[in-house]
Length: 328
Ligand SMILES: [Cu+2]
Image (cartoon, rainbow, N blue to C red; front, top):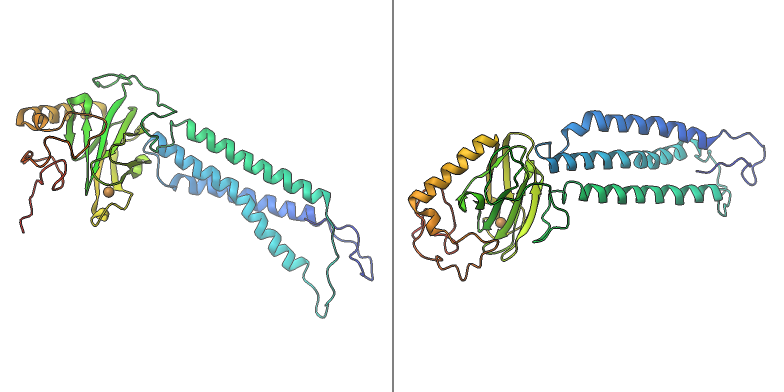
């Protein structure tokens, strides 16, 4: 901002200039404050992806804070633009040049300090928000640096803060879910208990996919022979949409299913029930043993006439036999 106290070169009369910097600051302050209040109190509660998990709440908070940080900058740029057009507009018939300016210590110092402060703030805020929710809801590879707090156990029971392990298996063109703490049983539907730390182990049996549980704010690549770990703690009951987020073939767009976050006791009875059913009808014995990754070329069950039992999905030629074989 120019705080030109001296009259412009060649100006005939020495009329006193108003304090443009103060004026700009006051207008900017009022507008920026109003915009930030509207963002925080009106827009923030409606921002994606909602508040269904800790990761989702953190992402919503991050978007709101970034919007609050950005709005004053945008408003300053636009305000200065409009102010310059209105106040410093050349009069009719005035073809003279503006005053030549060779540097201004105040403006330069303000610029360097202001931009440095903004960049450092974004760096610190971004780093903290990446670490605190144990990875921001994204896949962190086979050995995450930041781990979610929770007890590790080979079994899972309600009310114990035990980490629930859920394996997400992508294949053209569906997701299936295995629960190693329930005998390695497999479900076509993602079921999760509320208020429970969850570790997703995301992998693929064929091409690259991406596991995107929208309302949980989890998005993790599903790559063959890779165990990609992602964490979440569901905080509310409800339905979850799962989509593949990596172009993976002709039916990529149809690669989605739904999940549920239910109470801990409802989850346990569901999981135990599925485990007992799959034990009884032979699915558990037919499935490959639970491991963190699968090599479809060496799964001994591959291509055999394994699963014709309801509730298990798969696609032809890979892990499972098709449940509804298409005969040409
Ligand atoms: Cu896919």
